[in-house]
Length: 193
Image 1 (tube, rainbow, N blue to C red):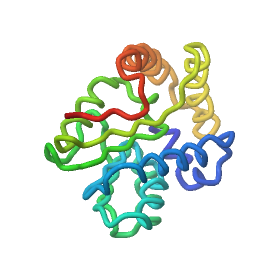
Image 2 (cartoon, rainbow, N blue to C red; image 1 turned 90 degrees about the horizontal axis):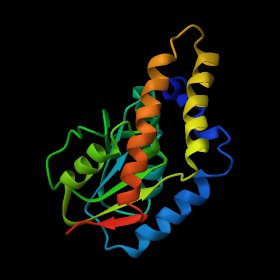
Image 3 (cartoon, helix red, strand yellow; image 1 turned 30 degrees about the horizontal axis):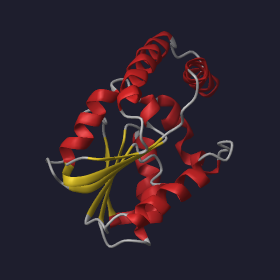
Image 4 (cartoon, rainbow, N blue to C red; image 1 turned 60 degrees about the vertical axis):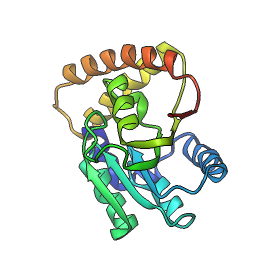
């Protein structure tokens, strides 16, 4: 969370090795194939870029949630009052059951310490017949572990002297939980009855 708070202001301009633009384009193409939703939630919305792209394509009510308060601030500046943006945890979504036709989660799922609980919450807020679009990075275990260890080191460059041990322990737990969840959820698009 601290890393994303520290990098929120320039996050949209940061080089991501070209991952985000084609991923968002692919996700928007998949969304175009779905029936037009009435309500969309972006879990781990970051700076709100997906919601910003959807804003011009749909009349649906838009909502987003991110653990980083600074990311949510950037999203609010980008989207204004057109989206219900909240700072919070993917494991306890602050909306009622069956609220959304569509839940999206892009490039954040691999950070969740308890992915099974996050998926349970996403399903809870989906209307019957709603769709979950999950788009995330997949890579070998060692590469994921190194990536999750590098983020705290980058954070330490931004905020020297902060302890890294709690973050490293959290990431180790997260990696094991994510691998277990991904074995069960291997498709990009999951529809819940």
